[in-house]
Image 1 (spheres, protein in one colour):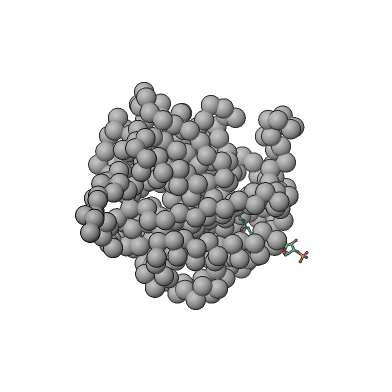
Image 2 (cartoon, protein in one colour; image 1 turned 120 degrees about the vertical axis):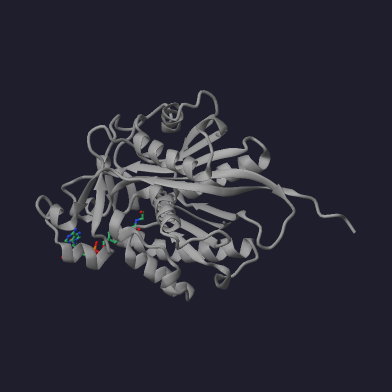
Length: 329
Ligand code: UT7
């Protein structure tokens, strides 16, 4: 019989989040957009979103979230070896916003880059950081989702501009080497997908290599909705199966916060109780790559998610891209 060997895992040791100072209600939006509080609440569950003001950017929000995550983990910026930042709204086309965050944190040398998978960005970033930590490239990683979607919205398109908000969320991943036990903490499994054939259902109509402009967000909402429910239910099943777990083992699902009706429909499809789903879409709207870590941080800080809990993250967005991760805290 072979003796079990210790293995290296990436463990979440802290989280943080940041929101722009300005909070905008549905009622305030009706002053400039042909919409109503009743329509937005009934169709999406959204009541508020935060909108970045002057001086607030993806990098400043990401930096604040990262500082809080490091404080929660009891670590200093100098201990960070890797920053992976998921965003579709970088401060500049290049360099990577992750390098601005690095400098703002006072770190002179570490690995730092951005990941672009729109609303699934945090899942992609978490997967990359998890692999790099397990492979030995770093011992401490900051995984950040940060966006300022308000800057790429067409404020004359009521079908999209009421749905999104700005914000950032971050987690600190630390390498830990131990023998495997069923309740051992760490990232247990990740499933990622992309299908570029659906580019035209959710995209930005500009870019450096095509129009030379930043462009505005365009979405065929009802079609995205149908794909979202199907793909999210499938990837949740898949990620649990990979970790030899079932829905009954899950304490909390932290989903991408696009639409309350998507969360409810996915839960129904999986036969899952709605009181195990973290919902923040009412307060933050859809913050794209920031939405999963932002919701996670809210549920950590209000005491819902506790050490030892099994948490599943899931998201779906432009591309299409979609993914899920099962993590033991
Ligand atoms: O984060 C990436 C993933 N994104 C998503 O998952 C978004 C998925 N899609 C959705 O969440 C929903 O499809 C929306 C919230 C975008 C739209 O909800 P819907 O129930 O699918 O509405 P709809 O687009 O079919 O529009 C229904 C009606 C239309 O009017 P008519 O044609 O029935 O007269 C729209 O013009 O609602 C109208 N409408 C609005 N009315 C008031 C669309 N936007 C608004 C608005 N205020 N803001």
